[in-house]
Length: 111
Image (cartoon, rainbow, N blue to C red; front, side, top):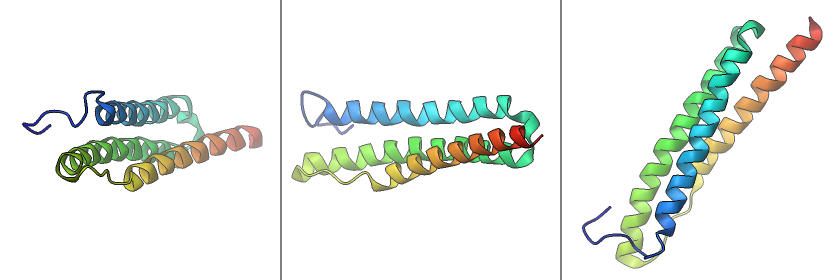
């Protein structure tokens, strides 16, 4: 945060950052749990789950950087940037986790 303090008294930007962080961490934890559950399904599923963990981490870092940018922009001119990169990383994390789960289900059905 800058020396000026929060942009608004309701702390909307701060609450949004915390929500993004919680969501990113929950996807990373779900991917880690997937590794434990799907360890016997093969290397490809584990690699996909690790990719989900990495994408959750990327979303966490990008959301933090976006907050700093948004806060600075809100304080200077009152406009907020769009959440494109964090949203893309979170969407990719969900997709990778879904593919890993589908691969696990199909691997179990075929054996």
